[in-house]
Image 1 (tube, one colour):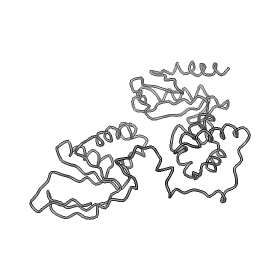
Image 2 (cartoon, one colour):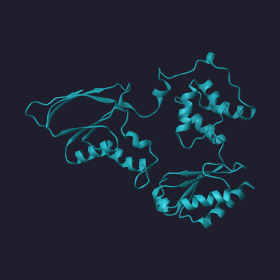
Image 3 (cartoon, one colour):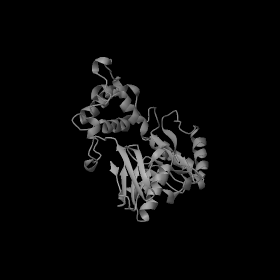
Image 4 (tube, helix red, strand yellow):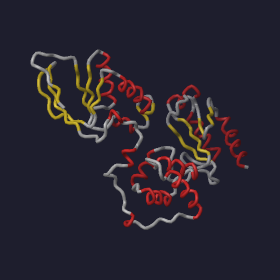
Length: 296
């Protein structure tokens, strides 16, 4: 694409190259000043490397807490046009009268019609699939066979079935045994690498056994300044395990998390559907005893 202006025609438009946090803020500032903004980035979406960060200096806020409001505002702003998968090839002209040539790579879908259904992923002709003859037939262990085959049969005729299959398996076993993932790959045609990318991306999934009750202790800024670190230490003391570890009886796993959206209840901990706000160290033994008593 090319934006051309005549010699004497100065137009109130700006091109921001790079859709990281700095580029997003620059685009918003320019647009709020009444300037039409083109935000170009060579990735398929804006956000840059900040989306890969856990905490940000100096507030220790999670990256998405900083980015999300800007992403929403850019998406809604009438004077900001995003040009993703693009590269600037040339710039000519002078201040106030530039001509910019941008090479835009194909996305192979119609952005205006995309609903996020995932059908393009399940029907992608370039996905790296493994042919059945290249791998040995996977036989499930007896304790998994009936449950997993039932889950696969339940979603067999569904479009884009992989995510609901993994969600049901996770609900049944609380983690993904390696042989089950290999069996899912064999039965669905999705490559094992593709399945592993999903299984390791979402924090709700785990490749190793975890406890029935996951102690999700929020370590976001609001909780941290109100003593979340002391609460985490108290949980490790009462349960006798470290962060990310599981008790021998497979009942509890301690998992520090970043900002669970309950800042008004800080410090806060979530396990399952139960939310515990305004916690104090003296509350921890009672919470642990509550779930132990339920199991007994």
